[in-house]
Length: 365
Image (cartoon, rainbow, N blue to C red; front, side):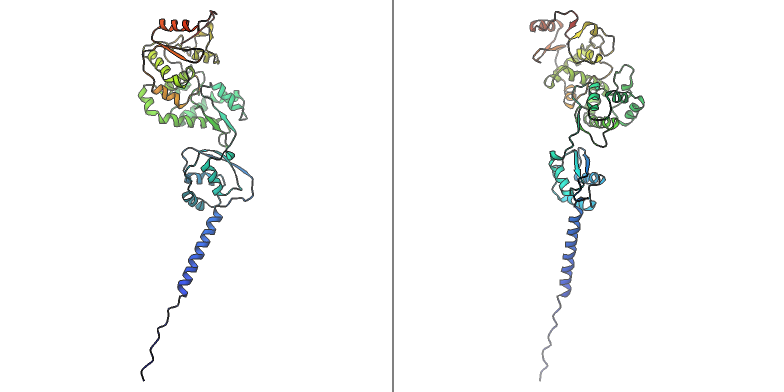
């Protein structure tokens, strides 16, 4: 008899199945870990946390900011979600979150710039405002009086600390003829008050940080203009007070022509600055002031800026409109008229009827 055929033993599927089960368990576990890691730090909590997201913040930087604010349950999970969550339009601002929000909820708010979560406590530093007006605006939101704020801004020790910190601040602001050292250096914008900017120093440096950004972007152009930063901001502030946006480049061109010819700027707004007033019509006694800010009397630029400025005015000065004009005035409708000669200027004023009968007042260029 022949031998019975030998059957081959089937390999068991146990090890493969076990591996699959282990992999699935790991995946399920990892998914649970990831999901838990994105949950709120304190579910159900309404404790508010103010978070400032600066300009240029990417998703990974925002994870760090939120973690420092105590709003991240698991930093590793948050970093993973920040990369794969599709957050493509993250918006800088000051937000008010609470510890009952999940990481994904918070990131969704930042990605959409949801108004409901924005800090509403803000201070508007107006374009063309004098430093005294800026101090008054800040005093309405911060627990300091205008006098306390202005005193800090005139504190030489504090000013020297700022000079050390910011490249564009120099000893020019400490000149004895400068009426307000930080005049023109606090960038005009709307600022949201956070826990880091609710002191005089904190708010001041927030404004200076903004100015740093604007000036750094134009640093090469400013150097090429031949002006120091202090001189540049001085001229820009005068242009800001003299004209609206559409006329600033042409007005800057007139002032450049007068500076080149050694003429006085003849700007009434610089005289108004001496007396902390905005009106254009001034008494003759004011126009006769011996204060070095009086550009009716003294040639060249005044000792320092006379107001806040914004980037558009900076660009108008850097890209001023070239012409032969040496004079200008604005009529009662705000239209600016330009002239090449004193005679044409005087005739233009007479034709439009801007001459005043009161000998104690006069209209400047």
